Length: 230
Ligand code: CA
Image (cartoon, rainbow, N blue to C red; front, side, top):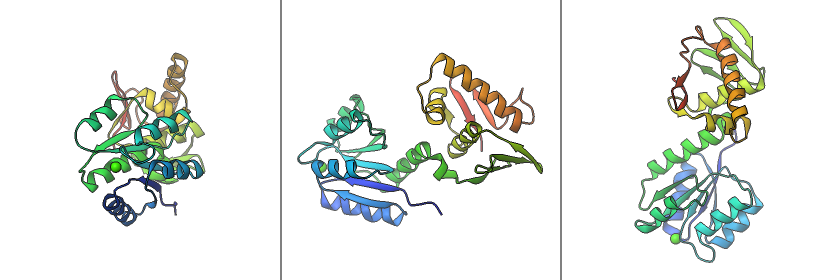
């Protein structure tokens, strides 16, 4: 089985922190807590988390300052900012401090959970779909780099496997070329990158689509990107 995703909760208000911890543990996350900015900085530098919930207004070092600092240091852990009602959330949305999302207090825990899951699907598709899974009726085996279609085994490359995993983890959502390239190639999209990716998509379609001139699994959304319709 996969390990539980780990979340660092940075929140100075004890009631909120405890509620978050209980709720997240109930939903099978591994939770660590930090009570102020200094402690958060120490813990986050010491250990890697799958996601950080970061309160904006914190003693010692503010969430805004922490977020900026961590991003400047190259930390890529997804961050959801917790902000109070009012100008704070607007400030966070307006400022480019590198948070992946923000949620305004008081928030519903279910809403927060949905956002956490969406971010984890995006950032860790392998965990979201696993190593063997169904993809539009095809049986995908990632470790074997094979796709089975109507009883026939088709070999896929590592890159194609990564693309399938990413699409499978993000069904029914338009994925921009920039996003796909960033997540599968781990690079910023360039003109050359666009051509490379288009070639890989075409090759993948030739393996999994019944009719490549009318793709039904990985659809092109004109001017927007691609979409896997589950
Ligand atoms: Ca606070």
